[in-house]
Length: 227
Image (cartoon, rainbow, N blue to C red; front, side, top):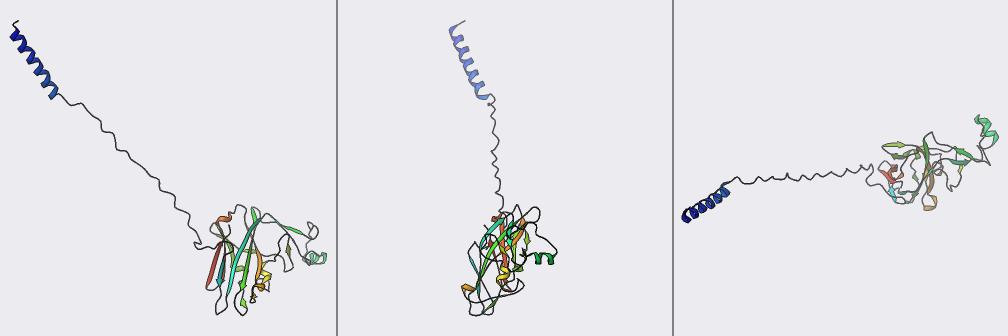
């Protein structure tokens, strides 16, 4: 073969290869799917039944027609049972008239137990008259515990002479003069009604979600957090 022909053939082959490379199908590429970011919304906080609830030892003013006072809740405690004594109720004569005998009485004290599945909640309150004349005291029926959407009324002790073991004050009922139905508070801090109220509540109660709610008068209602 002549060199000229060989050279021409080589040039033709080079051109053919170059043309084939330029016109060939482009390599396939795969586009990755878009990244989807999902977010989980934070759970909505539980609604608070009393958004402006007071803390322990915070005072709530109340009163109408120029008569003014303050109410305070200063302590709350759980008791599985409690022991109490009453000079009249513990006497054999009083027991006989009542038709019952306190076989569990020991040294004058009796043991009180809550309903099955419940416990006792003691709440301590102080109501003072800050005016210059006596004022009507809220009835203890106006003091309720609110927990998990339910309200619980107070449970009264047996009488005005009842003392509860390790409690220095008497029940609020008997602080206002007439056994809790109605009563008055005289002016001055020394005349404050300082006592406790007992509630029979579920043993599973969480005090951080419980409130004492008091209707202090027709124009004022206040709530206190119990923890």
